[in-house]
Amino acid sequence: MTYLRYSPDIERPEEDEQESIDGIIQGMTQQSEKVEQREHHAVRASHAKSTACVIGTLTVAPGLPPELAQGLFATPGSHPVAVRFAQGPGETLGDRVSTHRGMSIKVFGVAGEGLDGDTGGTQDFVFATGPTFPSGTAKGFLRDAKQIGAATPAPEGFKSAVSATMRGFNKVLHALGTESPKADFFGHPFSHPLGDAYFSQCPMRFGDYVAKLGAFPASPAQAALQDWKLDPDDDENGFRHAAVSFFADHEVVYELRAQLWTDADTQPIEDTSKAWSTDESPYRTVATIRLPRQPAYSTARQQYFDDVMTFRPAHTLALHRPLGSVMRARLQVYRALSDFRHRENGVVAKNPASIDEIPA
Image (cartoon, rainbow, N blue to C red; front, top):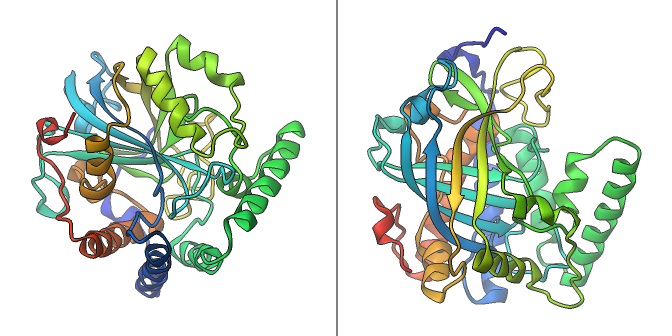
C-alpha cells in the first residue's frame, strides 16, 4: 500500500477562513457567558461535564513498521498520561441529553520540537465519539456553533427532547445499515462511556506521513459493556457513576490506532465530514493506553482536570501538527475560550509538565 507524504502545501485554507474563526470565537464566547450566568461558574464551551478524570500509561508498541514509527511513536517505551472523559455539551446537563462524548489525552515526557516552538513536553490528543466531525470546515463549524448557541438558553427539557429524537433517528438508520454522524453527534446512544471508541476526527501530521487516530476499547471487561444501557430516569449523572464504578473494579485499556492517508481524493484533508474508508486504509495499532483501577472522580482531581488543566490541539509535537480547516480553527478557538473560562473563574490555566503535578 502507498502512503501519501506530508508536505505543508497539502493544506489549502479558504480566503475567508479567518472570518469564520473569528465568528466561532465570538459566538462560543457569548454561549459561555450565558451558561456562566446560569451556572454561576464558567465551564468548557464543549465537553463541560466530566465523566472520569484518571491517570495511567501509554506504551508505544515495539517493532512498528517505518510508516507507523513516526513522531511520538518512533521510539518504543512508556509515557504517563492523564485522561479526561466527558459528555459533549458546553453546559452541565442531566444525562437524558446524551450527545457525543469526548476523551482528552495528555501524554507526558514527550521529547522533540513542539508546535511553533512550544516546549511544553506534552502531547495532547482531543478525541470524540464518531470518526468524523460533521461540521466539515471552519465555515460549517461556524454555522453549527450558531445553531448550538441559539439553543443554549432553551430549557433542559427541550434539549432532552431533541436528543431523544436524534437517538431514535440514529437507531432507525442503524437498523437500515447506514448512519448519520450528525444524528449521533446530537443523539448518542445511552451506552457506557468506557465501552465507546473515540477518534481524532480530523487529520494530523504523522511524522513523514498524515493520519487520523482512534482509541479503541481493548479489555474483556470493556467488551462486556456493549449491552450496557443507562436509564437516565434513575440517575441524571449515570454515565459518571458508571465510569467511577467501573474504574473501582477494573483496569481500562485502549489500543491507540493510526489510519494513514492513502488517497487525496477520497480522504480529504480540509473536509472532516468525509469519512476515510477503513477498507482503503485500516486503523493500525501504534500504542496501548492502560488506566489502572483508581478513584476516578476525587474532588481534588475533578477540580484540577475541569478548572485548571488545559487540553489543547496546540500542545503537540510539530511532527503531529493538526491539519485542515477545523483544526486550524481549533488552534485559535481552544485558546480563546480557555482564556475566557480561566479569567472568569480567577484560575491560572496550567499545562502541567509532569504527571506528579496532578492531585490524587
